[in-house]
Length: 425
View (cartoon, rainbow, N blue to C red):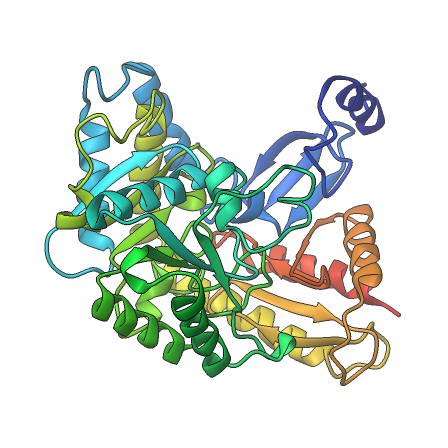
């Protein structure tokens, strides 16, 4: 029998160290919110491939749709020979996104491609080049996407200078002592000291920061950004790569606000585990790039499009938006009780809309001083005991829960029991 240790040894010899790992596990098979490693040990999955599996591992309807498409053809390159699944998916996304008026879609492969192409589209539409992003934000690891990302370690350290004309505004969170007024004041400083608003093509923001710690953008911030963008002709981009497709209890996190973005970036749970991303937005902006300026050899792959169409069907048929609310309520209630217990490690700031739930591990009960070392130990204890768990946050002390929305109550409760043991002081 192949072991996790043997595969880890082979991995270390063959694969670069720059690709990190949360666990030393190697998957053998998975179903819904359960995963088995190559040694046959079963795990409850609270990571979901980093928010990719809102419909779970190997949902039967998604797999069936992909198998049916696979029997027809697997690739033509949409720019060479188009195909209906791409068109049908674009039509459904156009109807779903919370943007009024004519809307159009472009499909790609990864989240970083989505954020980069959103910036390209904004630049084409405005004739400008500057971009405003936020500290703690994560927008990908490619050159432009990592420049947008508001975190140095590990995404920028030792990898050379970032691209110019990208500025970061402090993201308002109580943990960092930053209020909305502080963020807006800093943005005004940028406009006065570094870049006139007439040079800014886009402002990009995650409605709920993912890697940054599951902090939701305040309503007042989003309203102010919409006003500023309207005043100066700037494109507002919502990066919903992690928040999209039901994770926050709405199909898109921007539905929690009374203002709209101009462009929305999508990926992760869009295709139920198959590589697919997209940018959806106002048609007048989306059409700014010339033919050939957008696309990609594998962009909008037919297998992934078939999977995504099935994912949207599953959301309707299984009422997953409602399910996200139920799971989230269960998680937050459990964590709020755990926050008051003296027999567990001190935790704080239980938060997150829908089933996008997180909490911080801190050094003292009732305090906020982060404990990154304890967080790392909790994640390790969890997987050793059968729970796959992820940490995140600018201080590396946030535990995030991304269990599939299709998970049964018994599986969620089992995962929480394992988390309880991992948190035991």
